[in-house]
Amino acid sequence: MDHFQIINGVLHVEDVPLPRIADEVGTPVYVYSQATLVRHAQVFRDALLNAGVDNPHIAFAIKANPNLGVLRVLAKEGYGADVVSGGELTRAMAAGIAPEDIVFSGVGKTAEEMVQGLKSGIGQFNIESEEEGRELAAFAETMGLRATAALRVNPDVDAKTHGKISTGKAENKFGVAYDRAAGIYGRLAHLPGLEMRGLAIHIGSQMSSLEPLEAAIGKLGALIRDVRASGNNVTHADLGGGLGVPYQRDAVLPPPDDYGAMVARATKGWDVRLMFEPGRVICGNAGVLLTRVIRVKASASNTPFVIVDAAMNDLARPALYDAWHDFDAVAPTGQTGAAHIVGPVCETGDTFAMGREIDTVAANDLAVFRTAGAYGATMASTYNSRGLVPEVLVSGDRFAVVAERIMPATILDAEHVPDWLD
Ligand SMILES: *Cc1c(COP(=O)(O)O)cnc(C)c1O
Image (cartoon, rainbow, N blue to C red; front, side, top):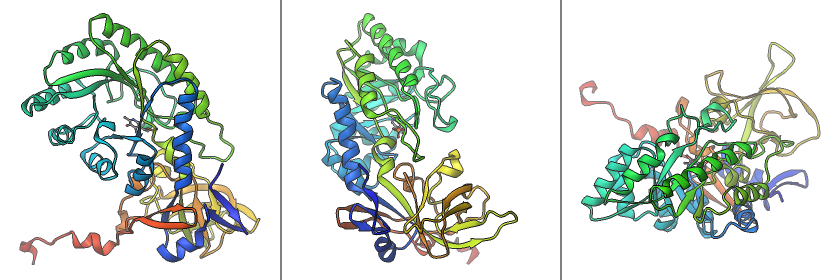
């Protein structure tokens, strides 16, 4: 079911027409559908439960969309959080996610972040190196605590996704080398400051096939047997995130039910509590970036430039990963034509699409970039001294600004001319 629909010729998010949001909040602005978030959270969990995965622990990877309002929606659905920084940990707690449901991932946790995690009583640290494990153990011991932890393993499997979001190949910085993992696990398990309880993987993002994941899970299963054979406990296995979403209308991706069935099959007999860290698949399709056409500019060829008021600083994915976002007029006339879609930022990289067949739009028309709910607002910057893009959450016929637009003047207020230049 889709909560982004044309009603009387105008694109709505749930029951709210997008022009209303543009009028009240301005553009560009991210708009999220609460009903879609809830639905995705439920579909993902049901897919696991229906396949026979007992009591899955699901931690939303909040780097995909850390907005407080969005996190509160998912907290109410019983989701935990996978965090990768102290800032994200603070957000997860502020959203009301129980500390025991928080997993702390990341290859570069600082001393301060480890201490913050320990003080907060989080449920699990996903340790990414023996060095990190030893440091964490020492902090915990000093504080009179034991850190509950899993060891993230790099299974050396190619996720077959964009190179910049592939994380499970041997040359990637994440996790410990597969061959060394059992040894490291055993050594860390002996440290008094650590309660080693599991193993974790996360091989990449926007995966369009389940095969790499199944291969990685197979390797994880073999490792669990090795670790147990050397006398250590494994009660938890964290399978990470990575499921892709359809960025193009006709794209075919593995349905959650297939994912659930694969997981159940691949983990049969493991006798662990399974943990999951979905990000994009929960929030990607729950958001659009609403933008206004500034003007349409003729080009050297016959294909015009549609210049919109959203730019690479608001939605970085096309510039960063050559990503595709469908572009639709909010009030389509039925006419279409080829155009280049660009933002106002002074970089050629500020290009959303070249020579794309799109709804014909004119100056002042509203349009959306679809599937912008994941890795959208969270990657925004103020490059070109633009404001920080706001976010709106819709529920039924209501909407609320869940992140304000931060104006260039506010950012300027935080800058100072040193006194020697006065
Ligand atoms: C980013 C990340 C995720 C989520 O990835 P998605 O592709 O958004 O599902 C999960 N776990 C870890 C450790 C991550 O870094």
